[in-house]
Amino acid sequence: MTVNQYSSGIIAVVAMELRQRLRSRGWYIMLIIWFALIGLVTTLTWFSWNAQYRYQNQYGGMGSDMVVPGPGPLIFEAVLAFVLLFGLLVAPALSANAISGDRAAGTLAIMQVTLLQPGQMLWGKFLASWIAALAFLVVSVPFLIFGIAQGGLGVWHILVALLMFAVELGVVCALGVGISALANRPLFSIVVTYLTVAALTFGTLIAFGLGMMLSNGTVQANETYYKGIEMYQKEGGVDEPEIYPSPSLPSDITDENDEYACYGPLREQSAQRSERVAWMLSMNPFVVVADAIPYPDRTDQEQMYASTGMFESISQGARYVQAGPDATYQCANGKVSSPYLDKQAPLWPLGLVLQLLVTAGILGLGWRALRTPAGKLPKGTRVA
Image (cartoon, rainbow, N blue to C red; front, side, top):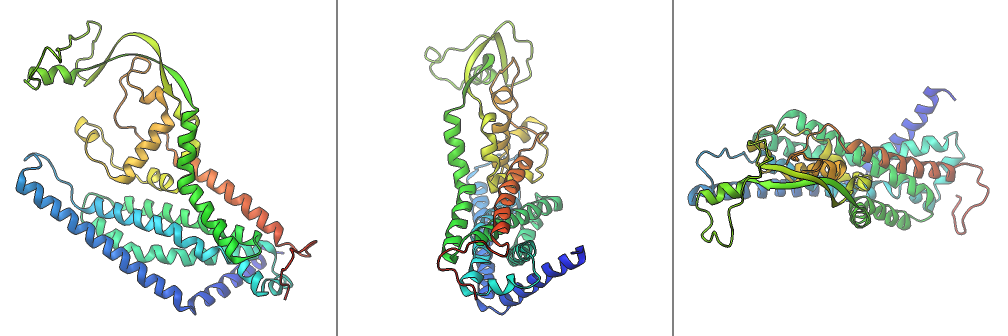
């Protein structure tokens, strides 16, 4: 079979699936509800930011020289988090019964006796469900653009976020189609697909937490001196100096610029070796999307301690986990650790590769289950 013939079979399956979905009213109703919910989230987020901004200005909650970011980042991240969370819930419903539903209705056998090969049916079902899921992403784009228009973010920001979100929807749809090919009943395939998505979203967090308990180790570090304590006491911030005595600056500190300083001999300190179990956390869809988004570089001290959004905080947490105590433990190997890690070693490629490997394995098993002639059919399976 040539490439053109193979692709023609895939296109035929995709066209058939999309025609069936477009004839269904439920799909349009879901899109309308989706649009209304995202609009409600965007409106509430915008009013919430304005109310907080007016309150801080009225009661002096912020300094006069402090630059207040616009509502753009807050709206963008709120909408993106909402879309990603509910997208992971909608995608299984669009793909988990793609093949098991045909098997239960007795139409799968009709497709199997045609010239269509198992791979063509899998690719066609997957692409059709992915296109249907991407329609929900397209509906949310105007609200994401509205967040960009409010300032604080760039075009590259939203493009990467949309691309990674589309990839995650594709992974979930592929998992649903593969499980659907293995299952004999639509309800069973839907439940297993939702459990698989829950394992990626919440199970990875639980596995990572349990793995951290078993990843105890040591790191070579010396003592930490916080210069802010001495400065705070010099400015009269402590009323009882006999309880909080002013520390003396160690003599072997040479760097007078950093807020923290390291002194004394290196000793073994107990620390959790988080880099050993970082691969578990990398498979989380939120970590993959958050870690791939390009955030602005924070070079000076003010930018490092500036407030960050939810997705940037997730990305930084993943970077700290991947770096381990050698880069994050204060005064590890005699060096002051930075409060903000750059993106020289991103974690999201590892997570995406692991997701694709799991997905490829399930699709491979699904391809094997669709081969004909079948040596043995499960009990109760309708053939035609």
